[in-house]
Image (cartoon, rainbow, N blue to C red):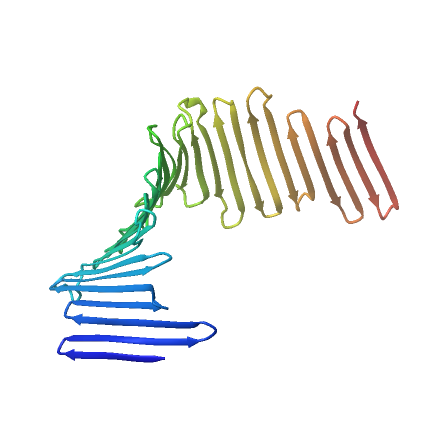
Length: 445
């Protein structure tokens, strides 16, 4: 093995020439010779390398580098050629950087461009790959473009984002061919203040002949809540369609004791003849109201299909007595719905519990139903009464206990139409040592 080189440098210039000689004496003689060298000048560098094997050139490499630099611009271009007997290749690499004169302590905006090209020296049309990247950076975001090319195929990716005061915006686009691509867009807008929370969101996805956009927003204050979510889509040249929901809540406070809260939920869809609206109103007109709510469902252009429901629960108690009254009502003309339920629960002095309830229900062509439920527990009269009526069916139970110093009397009645109707009395006199009982039983058919 023999190695020799010559190096010379003066100021910014330098030269290198060298040779490496290797011989391996095996069964056959093997001789390898490597010649190399480079010349470096300001902005330009050239290099070469040649490998000889047994007096045959097997590899020849050339290197060339050129740089450009001025205010706001730097560029390096390097080219390498590798000649061999198998697959001669060429490589070109470009690195370019652009920048501003300075802004807020930075050199933004900047643009950084890189490109790599690998190709066959003897037939670039058979093998030629190019990769590129371009990145533009600003104070608020970045814009990135990546590209890969081979013969007649191109793959591209574009993405960017921007962060502003109260807003974020982002786009991405991926392309495999002119008719094979997909993209999406995200935008978030924040308009929140000290008095309210307020944000908006948009997410859109697109690909050939399709476009979907999902949007949402909300706004919250001390007296209001507004929110909406919707999905829009387009197909070919068809008309844009959308589905979504809207929710609104409002607190209405009067200067008097009266207050009201309204909540509305709306749905819309291309198949609906009109938007479906569900509305609830919570009202306090009387300080005794525990619950006063009304509900409507509006889903048709036919006014007869409007459904209304209401419920009221009121505390009618005073200092000595407890009483709670309620009322439930519902109506829909198209289905002939008619619902009316009302009653109360009562407690005072010797009455441990008393409740009276009346109900009326009708719907469609079914026969209307009328019901009643009455019950009472009275400590003074020592009676318990239970009565339930459903149309012609009656269930009744009553029992009373009437004691005296030496006599005890219990009587009661039981009715369960149409099968049972019975009354009875039990008598006991401890002084006279007398007892008797009578039961009157009337069986049904």
